[in-house]
Image 1 (cartoon, rainbow, N blue to C red):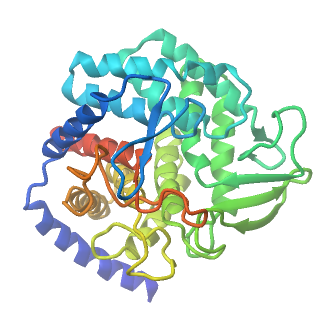
Image 2: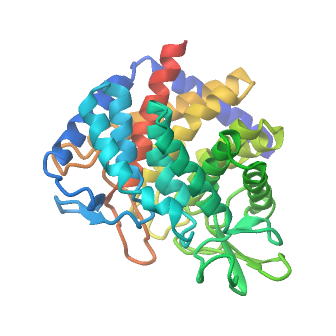
Length: 398
């Protein structure tokens, strides 16, 4: 019965999305908008040690962080995307300046599991676009630092380390869904001069997470707690979601993006099948405008805060997933959903425009902790730009 319902939904949504395509969504138009907004921000930024992170609801000014913050790589990453789109050297120079600030991360103790976010979204894009060997060396050192957080008994990378890794593991080993995105740095490094063990760590982390981080309906826990000594799973909980049993929107988006990337890197069919399963349950439960509430079980829906960042992450993943799925109908479904999501995010309801200098409104960071609720958040902007660029390239390749 469930499979029949999914098939009917897939057919109806595919037809609807085909009609949506007729409106000819323009990735270039929205990328031009991104460049306009970035120009507004860069005109007022003078200190590269103050990196934009978020703008609170009702405010105009960026909140800044240092290079140590887990979000520090997204701003230089956006500058690299601006350079990729425009080929204007001024964006390359800005991107280089902010990327250089992050170099020390590669050579310090890995006390943050988000090292992949920090350096691969920034320096990784820089290397992809310039082939600068300095960037390559930094990335390889960073991958080695991140790998220190891997616990072979558990089979995952440690999240939120409490002590210097390699000296004394905590009694409990936490792994959060966000860590799936950090694996891309390890896969890249293993294929670009680093140790094969980096690939093995990334693949093992993805496999262990696939086995322990999901409920029977393929919705994800935010956090899984393991026993460090035995490697056994203790429980699945949430930290930023509504409840231990609920689907936190951004966590599920990380899963969609992460397993799509892992399949791209490994070509292991298990991961492609799983990427589709975690994607389908997310897409089936979206509200009409395709931008999720911060948690799918959040109290107060439809008055609960949305999370545009979860939509942006998912849209970017869907563009790529559409190129990896062999079934043409399913591929078209994912691509059309991505385009419809981007159409919604590009509307006056979600674009920042004159409200502030960011790209998007209505993202939610840490609702239970009261942080960055209904705000403009840098990672939402980053994945929005990435999704637009991916869609543009996909259309140009046809």
